[in-house]
Length: 381
Image 1 (cartoon, rainbow, N blue to C red):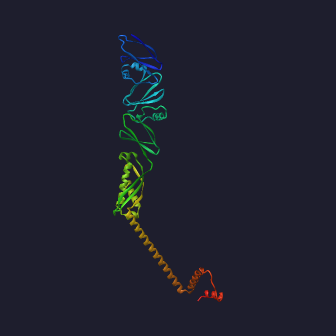
Image 2 (cartoon, rainbow, N blue to C red):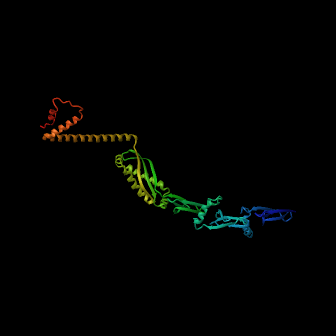
């Protein structure tokens, strides 16, 4: 027989085992144990520090099932069902989120451990006070464990959020902060931008009715009018809009000749807008504006078109030149008729011509007297 002394500090508890089976919990102090005595068996003591209150031991389930008095005296018991979660606090501070079906023991003593049980069977959204509390815990030095069981989402002011539960659209979330339980369900929040959005349809090569290949770049602006309808009917609304714009562009260009498109470039915008708007109304989308940014012609077609334009402009210039010559000739004829019937008018025309000639003469030499020259110039016949 051998006598052993076991000392349990004030911040500790001891678990006395005999042949591996639970015997009792040792309180702080000194305990003398007999070993080697027949009938006592092998005895050992396991010490636990109370500043780590979680009791993770193979005998935890045994104690909860067979030693309820010991559990009630020495431990805080957390036993959750499939539809319950627990908020574990230490000295009033939230430290852990316990998932459903959790069974744990925590030592009583130095740390005040409490477990608040919440039933999540009838709701998926966390209370606003609890959601705000979880947000605040992210700023603390000590992180809260178990937050993977909560989905936190923030919807901006200019957007909306689509709440999906188990693959189904539940509801539309207004701007704000939200938190949802992920336990026992598949929860997701998809953010949607409700502002005016731009979509570019670039590099579309389309044949006109007269078999001319054009490359067009289209720009469109759009917005959501009914987000829930759009995501219930369409997997990807933006991609659906892109395809509809492609179809509308082909309908506008493929049914018209190159000359028709060049004469009225806005016809493409009008046809695409009319065709696409009617189709989008049933899906909760609205087309705000459509515009063709570029129409690129093939190289040889550019040369031909430049020659046509050059010839047209040359013809217009020739017509204008002939029109002006005709007008000038008609004016001269009218002037001649006036001077033929009126000698005074003819003399005035002569004087006007003389004035123009005199403006270009730098010096005049007069012989025989100045009076005779002046009299000859102004003499009217």
